View 1 (cartoon, rainbow, N blue to C red):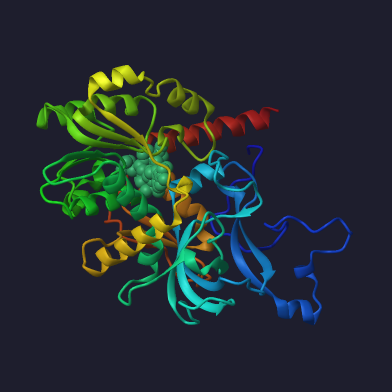
View 2: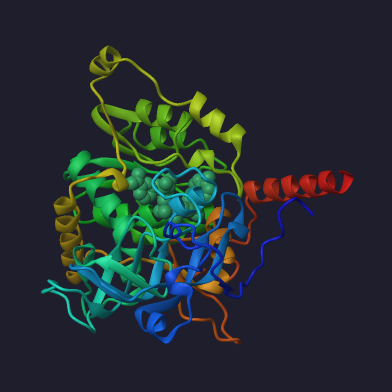
Length: 426
Ligand SMILES: NC(=O)c1ccc[n+]([C@@H]2O[C@H](COP(=O)([O-])OP(=O)(O)OC[C@H]3O[C@@H](n4cnc5c(N)ncnc54)[C@H](OP(=O)(O)O)[C@@H]3O)[C@@H](O)[C@H]2O)c1
């Protein structure tokens, strides 16, 4: 075995070992909310939560029982969470590479949906029983979450909890990049990588709201039929083909917009693929991630190959380069306005999240694995409700689909086997 224990496929909740919040002053007494006096119990709530306990592999995300104060501050609401979204950022955060997440131990989760159980003072436009979408920097992967009311959005009646949890991060990112940064207009062409993922599908759907947009999308071959049905004009298998060549065969002059979540040499390729007056939006560095653990070599390679050019060259190229990071947008009004716009588009039937699969909290390892191993088409959802014994994970995958093993998964197994051998020798 390697130094770390093999991940448990299905976790049983542990009692909370360390609270998310800073510990109380060292008095030797247990934290206030952990004392079992009836008065303290009345003021506290316990709920199951997925807590990042350290940086590393799957086993760092643990199902724990947390206690928190029932006392709501002015403007806050208490939500019983019904579904949460899993994002690529959480895989990266688990490896210790996402600067927006507070250090462990910390409850993960940036988005979810649920039902309001209590409202604090001054909350006028939300009431107990309302179904809401929740957006937060962290902390949503738990049964009960306290959030500011203005970070929640009323769910349309016909929207499922899974859909509600799938909207905020993917669709805000897609919408703001397309319409605030890249200024998508009719008759334009666009390249989106990871086209079958959460953001990729959101981008594709939003492109359909504009007339005559040609979408080039890279994805694993088994996903092409689905993404073509969803609106990708030209799906490209980046694993077996050179996507630059494929695009040039169809559109020799290149594309108007490139959305780049990969980084490294792909940013350079994206820039070269732009037509004059085209826009490149860099919004991720997925090339740094090769498996469940941090890979310093991949990080160094991505960093070394990143695009670097001077502004004079940029002027002569007649191209624009933008960087996008949803978590670093300080304008909360813009975020709220965009969320309401997205809910309107949902109501009009113009966008609809594709739910790839849903996993109970106990199965969080399998959920993360599905994304790391590149099997998902659309959004992976985590469900706080405890798993019933006979239940299997709900998945949208076709029979036989995704049967292939990724090179990364194979590499990872090799890497782990090597570690095991090394540990045994030691
Ligand atoms: N800057 C921002 O504000 C922001 C916000 C949200 C997301 N993002 C970025 O957008 C990208 C997509 O995020 P998402 O949450 O929607 O995830 P996702 O696309 O659902 O991610 C999983 C899919 O990405 C593809 N992929 C490509 N490289 C991968 C790698 N190294 N490891 C695993 N999968 C890889 C795989 O599909 P195929 O093999 O089919 O391509 C996989 O199924 C990520 O880079 C994320 O960091 C950025």
